[in-house]
Length: 459
Ligand code: GAP
Image 1 (cartoon, helix red, strand yellow):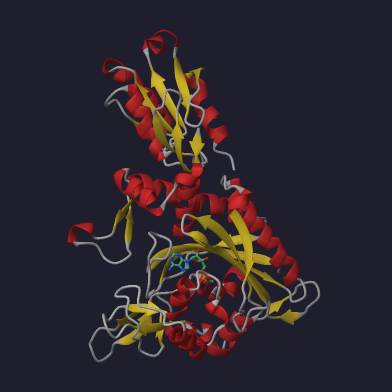
Image 2: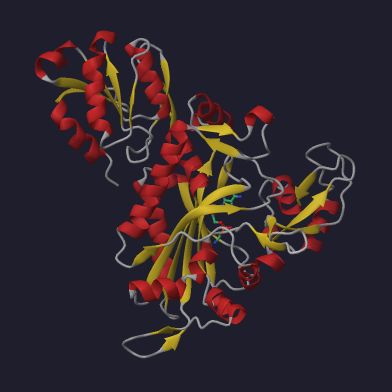
């Protein structure tokens, strides 16, 4: 009997630590608030998640192109995008214990999600907190500073001497790298509008209240896709990308009822429409990704601030215009967390035994197969099979402990197939292949393994 509702954030964190998926960052120094390091299993899963996204939004698209822009960009980029002036969180400090919180989070938690702070001004948030005597989650007192806005961008500086230092920023989103390269990509690919630019890369935000494992961190990866289109076609493409974003999640194995669309209650000043896809995390419904109709705001602002022309010239109609942008943005780490939560299952087996099993889609699983010699004296043949398969896939090899224990270890990291080498293998070149989810076994010729695994990985 399976229990997919058993996932809690604590169980996921503990499993990740025990099985080499994710470790606390700088752990031997006592950690560093909300930074996390991916271990040998985790890095494979995350790379597979990113690969799957790239496959769907670049490889399988006939008109989307990838870039990998610099993390450090000219500071004018962030003036143009509005991040310097308004990428802020409303922070409040507890005067008693000096802990710092976001006012919007205090209200959301206090009202148990019934009040939406996104639609409140700073004055309205202060009034709510005063009227409801919202207490400090750290010390329980109610003695707050007024709200102060806090820019989320990490600053650093460049220059060879102290005097010549210039302030620069770690990018808070990858999107601007796509916007500033709009004409470079268009010119070099000879793309015609509509077309897309995609990027996967690190972003940094000095979040005041990071928490919940890798859900909200100060350093994370984004997978962003900007679709440049003509004004008037933008609404249609916005709807199309809402659908594509959902289809991508479904193809990774998410259940439809664990996902929902949520329109933004308050639109950014440049946005015509915006919505999130939320996932039912163990902490409740939370944003997984965003789809935004950003109009021609970004390209127009870069034209204004850089002095460079951002017009697209339609080669057929000779029309000149600045395209609209439909943006689809998803955090690779946040998606990784959702993938972990969705895969987690505690099963009670016949006879009362239990097992934790991660039902990852084979395309996402760290290792596609584990090679297990039934006994140590079969290891030579087992290593030969492992070597052969490792030319095509990430596979793992395990000869330690009983076969039952080895199966359990693989179940916990979600390896879809356990391939056992036994004495029959030496006679007829066949192995047993155990399916992670059904635990059923079939016998197969070694020569058939690669095609069998490859087929299961299709998304
Ligand atoms: N370019 C648009 C943009 O950055 P966003 O809603 O701020 O929009 C997009 O971020 C996605 O990036 C989110 O839906 C989420 O998946 C991820 N994300 C944002 N902030 C994050 C953080 N602090 N930690 C982890 N993931 C984050």
